[in-house]
Length: 297
Ligand code: SF4
Image (tube, rainbow, N blue to C red; front, top):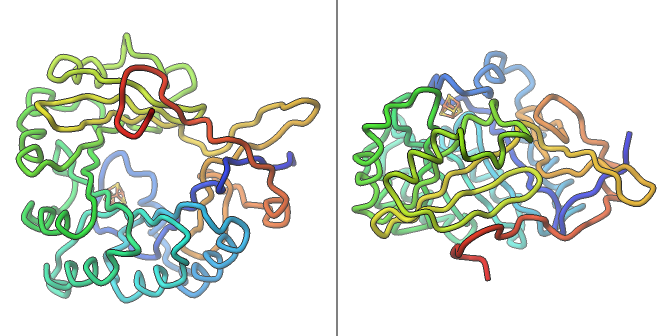
């Protein structure tokens, strides 16, 4: 095994909550994880959160699933385990069910608004998920920053793109379009000539610039004043690279599974925790590669 290297502050820690989302998006690779709920444990997840906080006290945490908002009580327990030195992002569909009202969700977000840095809400061009109304999204935006995430899967209906963007433009909610990352390769990560999504967005909006690193990139556009990004990322989270005489495993994401097990990649590779305690830090290689983009000098 190679020694680990990661960016200053530490790799992002993605926490898979132990609750299914109830949806069936065709591009979802997490769905099968929830087929067997045996061994899922909030307590073990919290222990692993503590471990990661101890090693990298300033890393970012992302809650994903499944559905983090499927059980607000447990999400509260997990959030309470993360000290204020970390940024917390939550990927959700903002589910409203017969056991969980709009008020329950809004009260929860209001109570935790100091902890939550950003909510990424899935709203796809084709309706793969059960959506709560846009009025919920608007109310959430009054409490914490919100972005809409939209996977443009295979032969998506491009004639619906403008209507989709207008739906969120009227509330000034930024949109991140996403390439199906199971299809991303080092060769097509920065390839634009044959990239259908990139070219469709160029036709309807103004290209502003590009940020990126070894692992992922974001093409930035302006659609009548609304900020749009097109995000591509590789389907793994470790890059093996030589530096001087040493070969390193460079970690971008660390995953806490529903069982609390900590992995260094999405493919089931377990993190060697003792080795990660000796991780070498490098400057984060995400930077502006072209144009002018908010947040970059
Ligand atoms: S909502 Fe998210 S977790 Fe659920 S099926 Fe869709 S992509 Fe997968």
